[in-house]
Image 1 (cartoon, rainbow, N blue to C red):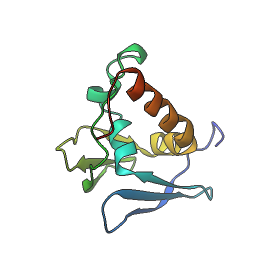
Image 2: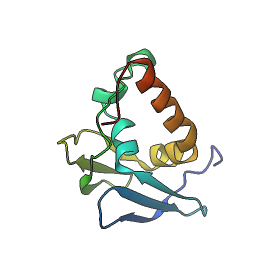
Image 3: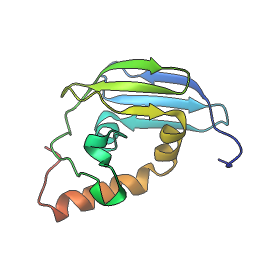
Image 4: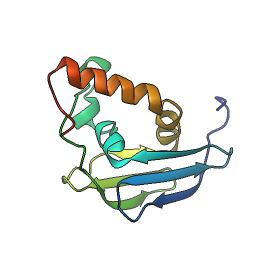
Length: 121
C-alpha cells in the first residue's frame, strides 16, 4: 500500500463459526484474520498500552469468538469478543497493516507467549 492511498474495505464478512473475519480491500488485497489474532492485536489501550514498551501479551484466547461487529463512522469497526472485550476500534488502515504483517505478528506473539510462560489456552 502506498502512503498516499488508504485501502478501503469492499467486503467485511464474519464466518458462521464466528472465529474468522475476512476483509477485502479495494486495491485487491484480502485478509482472513482469526478471532484470536484480532483479540490479541486489539488496538485498545488494554492491549497496546500507551506506548510501544507498554504492549500487553495476552494469553488464553485460543477459543475467543467475535460476538459482534459495529461500524464506527466510516473509518472503522468495533469488534466485541466472546470474552467481553470491546474497546478496540479497528480502523481500515490498522486492519490493512496487520493483514499485511499477519504472519510476522503471529510468530512474534507466539514467541512472546513462550518467553512469558503463557499459553494460548
